[in-house]
Image (cartoon, rainbow, N blue to C red):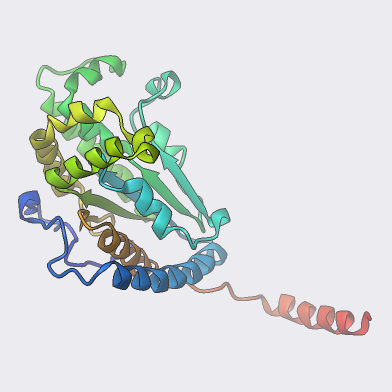
Length: 291
């Protein structure tokens, strides 16, 4: 398994992560123009690496995005992946499970959408919802057709953490490189973004009354996120806690992390077999004569 790059925003692998100690914004704001220019350069580099990933055809890259509402998941995915060949990238959003999905285990629906070798897959929310929103609202377990629920529901979530770690280790062993992003927006910034959605007609469609209900559980969500990141940030599937109050900074940091990850994969265009190369020479000679 690859040893993936770390940064100042990488969640430690020893369970010592404290979400309250993580910043929501950069220590020094270099300005939107600077971040946009750097993002443009980074996307260009990412595009070149993505083409080699596609040709290399031995690894896939899975990017997982989790965050509170209004943290900027959608816009970050759109901004960061804007320069990628769409044939080499797949994006899936996970919301309330369908009846078909409830007839399977909680990892099934995401497992059916994993990226193929050579491709970048993006999960906008993911199987981590099962240890986040379900943990905040444990009554959801009653709708999941689980044969026998223990009295101590913490047992369910500990088992799910174990399943997630095993699942990601299996994927990593078989060529799927996993990078996970928690977009760390502050409660005050979320409030401002909700107000913007209400005040701007073009953004009204983004606002949902249910988001306000979830906001009331902010502290519980933060506890669940901290626990989830501590228990599932691994050297082969790291979490990165990215400051999200400054969207331009956040997008650049996500893009840079993706590029650094692609670089560690030792990607290269496949070699051409000597016999094939000889056939290429004959074909070229034939084409040069075919005027």
